[in-house]
Image 1: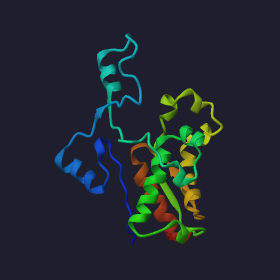
Image 2: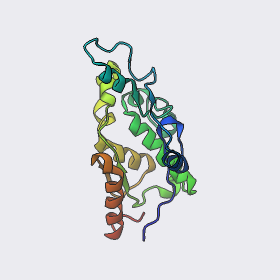
Image 3: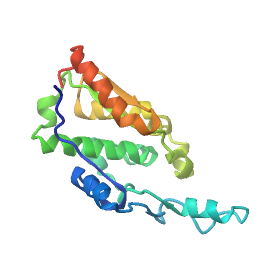
Image 4: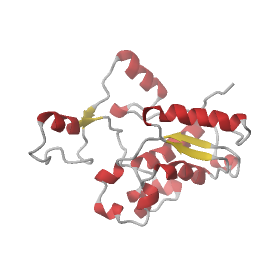
Length: 190
C-alpha cells in the first residue's frame, strides 16, 4: 500500500489546499479569471484577432503570486530566479511546504535515497518572459521540464531517482504511477 502525506496545492482563483480543490469541484466554482496585468497585454492584441480568440486570451486559470519567490531561501540568485519558469519556483516552495506539513526538515533528508516524481506540463513561460531572461545563462534550465525535478532534488539534497513526467492532462497520475514503481523496485526509500 502507498500513502500520500504532505500534499500541497496551489489553484487558480486563490485556492491553496487540497480541501480548496475539493470545494471547487463540489461547489462547481469557476476558478477562471482575467489575465493579471503582469502576465501579458490583453488590450494590445492585434486587430486581426477575432472576438473568440481575444476572449480566450483574456481569461485563464492563474495562480495568485506566481511572480513572487523567496529566492534566498533556496540559494537562487536574482538572475537565475528571473529566468526560471514560475512552475519551478512554485515547485520548490510547495515541495518545501509539503515536507514541513509532515514535520520533515532538509537536514534530516540530506543525502537520503528519497525520490522525486513530478507531473508537469510544457512550460509557456518562454512565450511571455522578458527578453533579458531569454538571453540569460540560466534560460535553458529555467524553462525545461526535465530540470524541474532535479531542481527540487538538489535543493533538498536528495539522492534518489527523480523524473519530470509530461503526459499532458495525466501528468500527475503518470508521475505517481512511476513513483510507486520506484518504491516497489527499491530504487528509493520514500
